Image (cartoon, rainbow, N blue to C red; front, top):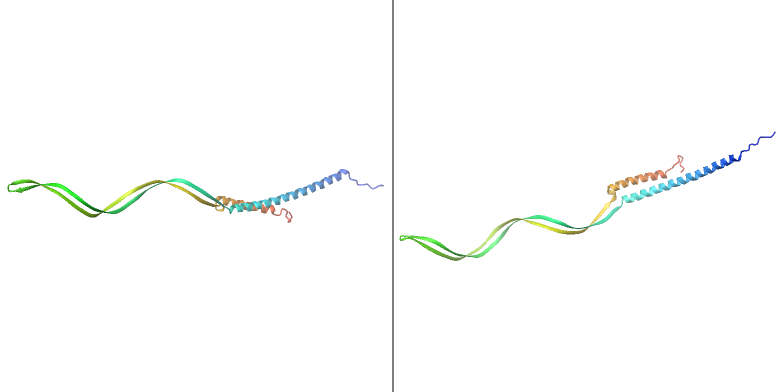
Length: 181
């Protein structure tokens, strides 16, 4: 008797060929995904470095100010001033006198015409408040230097940098437990 021949149908071999093809496609797909993962990790690390550089940067700007400022104030003034007086004062007047005699009272008009020289110094106290009101034009350039790391924005950049560094470390770390990628 003849030994049975174990012949497999052709679709059996076709099935094995499809399985091996799919295994090859999966290997290529996993390799591509691991490559994308490594590139994403490099991108996260580069982004973390860029955020760190931004956090340590400084914004330099010059602000031009051109305005008219109203100024209003009062200046108190308190002083004593010495005033020299040198003048000749003319006196032209008449005095009415009554002379009493034994014969009776007689009215007498005495004319006075004289020049009285006056030479003196006097102290004059001066106390006053002098109001001053004006409009002053102001034109100037103000340099502004803003360190981003010392602002609230810098604090949020610090957190963003730490997060990106963590993502980069996770994406570039080992995926398989035995050390492969």
